[in-house]
Amino acid sequence: MKSNEILTYFNDSKIHHLDELYCSLTCKSPKNAPSKETLRRSLNRLKNQGDIYLVSKNIYAKGKKLTYEPEYDIKLKRLNNFIKNQYSEINYIVWDTSWLKIFSHNYYMTSYKVVEVEKGFEETIFNYVKSKYPSTFLNPTEKEYEMYIDSPDTIIIKSLLKRAPVLKSSKGNFPKIEKLIVDTYIDKAAFNWLQGVEWKRMLNNMIDSCEVDMTTLINYSLYRKNEQVLENFYSTIKNYRNETDHINQFFHYSVGESRDSIDWKAINSRVKENLILTSCKCPKNKCTKEICSDNRK
Image (cartoon, rainbow, N blue to C red; front, top):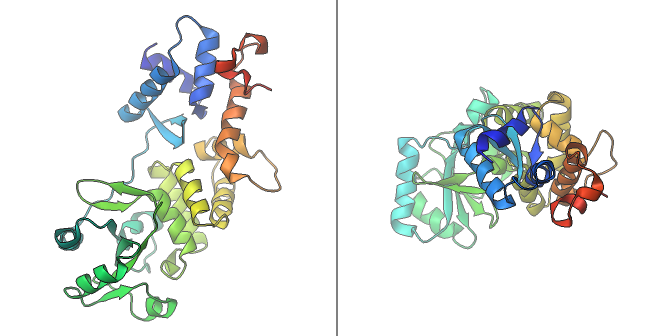
C-alpha cells in the first residue's frame, strides 16, 4: 500500500493512532495490508513530507506543523562557542527568552540569556562565564529576578534536569517547545511576565504554529512532579480551541466530556483504545488477537 493511499484515511480531519490504522487496513484487506512496521515508515514519510504531523506518540493528524527550532543570533553563538571550546564534554543548552516574543506578544517581557548545565557543573560554568560576561547570575532568587535581571546582556546559569526535552542541532542545543511550555508555567519568578492569560495566549500561539508532542509534554510535567501545568493546559484547550482542533480531539478521546480526574500516565493508551472502538468497523469476531481484539472489549 502506497503512502498516498494511507493519507486518504486522514481526510476526515480526525487524529489517528498507528494501531487504529493498522487494525482498519488489515480488517479491510487482510492480504494487501502492510505490516505495522511498514505502516510506521509510511507515516514517518508522510510526516517528513509535511502531509501529517505528530500529536502524541504514534498519534498523527493531517496538516503541517513545524518543529520548533529558533535562530541563534551572533551573541548567542559566541556564548555557546565560548563554553563549548572549554567544556565540550559537559551537557548544557543555551537559549534566549526573547525567543518567546513571537508567541507571547508581551511588550513588557524580560529578555535575557539562559545557560542550563548538567547537575554538578553549575558553579564551574558560572565562574567561567562570569569571567567574560560580568552580568551573570547563578540560580537567581525571586528578588534578584525583579531587581537585576532585565537586560539582553544578562546571563542566567541554572541546572539542566536530566530528562528535560532538548533538541540537539549543528547550531547548538536548546529546549524543545514542550520544555518551554512546562518551565514557563512552573518557574514563575523566572517568567513572571508569562503568567495567567499571557501564558494561555502563548500556549495557543505555539500550538497554532508548531508541533507539540503531548507524550513529551506529559512525561516532562510528571517528571517535574507538577500536574497543575497539565490541568491548566487541558482547561486552556477546552476553553479556547474548537472541537475540530487536533489536541482538543486528543483530550476528547482520552478524557471525554466529564471527568473527576485524569490518569495522565494512561492517557495515550486511552486515546488508542477509543480511536479503535470508534474507527475500526470490522466485526469483533474477525479481529485477530495481534490486530485489535485486545482493544475491542
